[in-house]
Image (cartoon, rainbow, N blue to C red; front, side):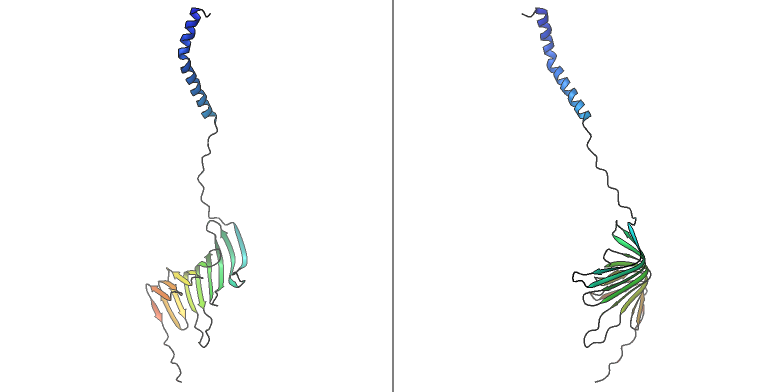
Length: 209
């Protein structure tokens, strides 16, 4: 049998036992949390820098459609590809494109910025875009339409040419200048703004039958 003094000590200790156990549990939980590895904080992705990942010198790149037909040829003295925009910056650029209907677009400039397939190009410095259509049976071939300026933005497949800088439109003997231009061949719309001046040759009289 337990002596009275020892029994009273045990009873007094048992009163504080739950508190001690809770303290030990809290201490163990704190130690586990502190010892556990910290979750990885996702780092903010750094934006891609505008740096060329490859270049070409005195090059010629050809594009073909699904049937193997030649669609476009892009030439230049130096081309640099920028992966952040997937564009080519080309010195002394020349582009020759032919659509499914046989219409030919030729573009050139001191410098050009083209998308991956050459369907959209911005031309800087002595920029020229000329578009011609094949003759139709029984009809005389139409004169090519030519755009000249220091800046031209062309969408080859959409048959559009824009410029917010002075531009000259030439077709046959007709010549028109303006401060800006928006041409959409598919919609048959031509808008020339600003100081518009032109020289339009009179239509030739048709021979009498």
